Image 1: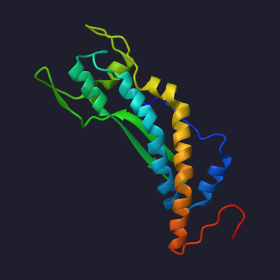
Image 2 (image 1 turned 180 degrees about the vertical axis):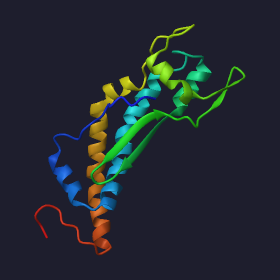
Image 3 (image 1 turned 60 degrees about the vertical axis):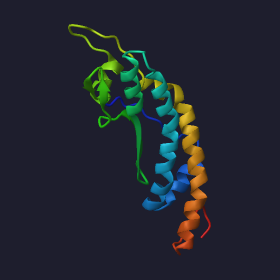
Image 4 (image 1 turned 45 degrees about the vertical axis):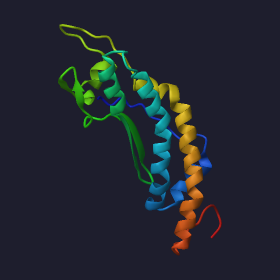
Length: 167
């Protein structure tokens, strides 16, 4: 799939951002990777719903496309990324032939010309657009939930953790 540059930014929650920047890389990863994963869940579910059986292909092929929609998250202190994509490792048999939805997802998403042109049927792009606010809420809530636990674990190990002005 092509990279579209669709992105989200955690805006308005300056307190959470400042706190995360003060933590070590490992602590930030322990918080942000699960938070990104939680934020991607509503987007992934909407993409799966948009790739409903019978919409473009046969119910078997569309069901396989839904199954292949996955999410991935990577996190460092200064760089956090997540993506919803069609996994190329998922395959199945449809109408007696091997079918890999990840190989044709771009053709469904953007359409194609040629001998038998097909119109675009976007299912990933619309999922991000419609669920962006839900994703940000889920991400923020998960990060706020995990922050005290990670700080408590670090302090239990004897590592100094300073949040705010307290030392």
